[in-house]
Length: 419
Ligand SMILES: Cc1cc2nc3c(=O)[nH]c(=O)nc-3n(C[C@H](O)[C@H](O)[C@H](O)COP(=O)(O)OP(=O)(O)OC[C@H]3O[C@@H](n4cnc5c(N)ncnc54)[C@H](O)[C@@H]3O)c2cc1C
Image (cartoon, rainbow, N blue to C red; front, side, top):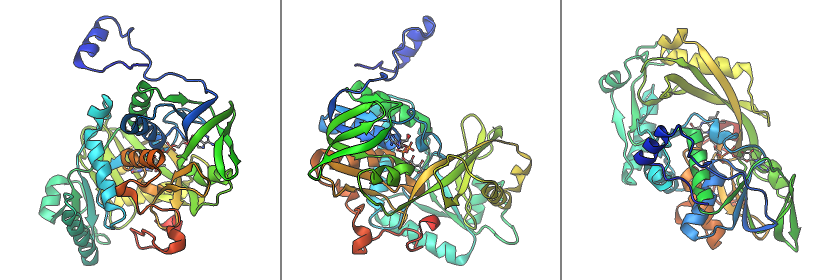
């Protein structure tokens, strides 16, 4: 099916005829008996994988099988932050590849995903933290990634509402990545869905994978609530449900599932025009184009598959916000919600083969999964199509926990809840 081309002319044409001529952005496909590739999970990663399989590798006999609806998972629940300010060699090329794909995404998909490179400012509050951020910034620059260290007068110009002289957490400066920012999260799901559908991919909603058919160590297809679907290759991209889904194929993953909450305030006039993170607690904030302050903090800290969180974390996040910018104290909170996140043992993801032939895994995305969406899709498609890792994702191996080659960006050790 061909999709509408969104342009100034089509918008004008439809405005004149009451918007009656738009085609649906993607078909509501019914499952066929078999496909070359079945992707389990219609989140940002699954849909991006289908798009790059079709666009880059010419593999179009593909189904994305989603148990709910497109955009109902974490891709539509996150705080929309994108950046590539990583330190470790395993992560740096991957996240920079992702940021470059974000920079060209809207042209690639012919879809307005509201990519906004408004900058990401990470505050520091002590001399030790300044050293750590300077080190990170230097590593970024040596890898050709933009980074600058801001002093207090410069920060006061950009973020005048911060409590600079807070007695416990005085603000001493920040590391900024100007190319970081935000992207409208659900538009990412819709844009990839539309682009993949336009190249012939079937997007099958309300279809839960309930098992795998494996013969002689090789994948044959997936059992679903809408019947068996045969597949030469199957890719798992089920975010917070990875360990549960993989266990149906007999795999035990080095992953825990945790709830992460997000919050949005009532709409305000323009207040903060960058992304800002607190360095003495876990709090990050930006402002949506509708005017709501969008913010979040730590995971709830206990294992859960519930897509909602508990009140102690709400209190903790709001305390972080108040310590950083007391002026938001009288703003009303409009909504909060939760999503289930894979937390891996070292805080880094997995894009790899599994011991089952023809079964591939994209999992363990923790806090960094939204910013990774384009690169995860590109690299997972590369792995599935060519049976070899993409050059920027060679470190994301499943066996690294056994071989000791972990990628522990935070330096926390094997503590999934602390990454
Ligand atoms: C509150 C919150 C804030 C976040 N903020 C950020 C941020 O600012 N920046 C950032 O980079 N990351 C952020 N993240 C992380 C990021 O959102 C996730 O890591 C990423 O979205 C996961 O990939 P996905 O989009 O494919 O996941 P999802 O959208 O969750 O997709 C997985 C899909 O698999 C489906 N599925 C599960 N089991 C089955 C089954 N058996 N059969 C069929 N389908 C199944 C689910 O229904 C779901 O739709 C945040 C996460 C949360 C929860």
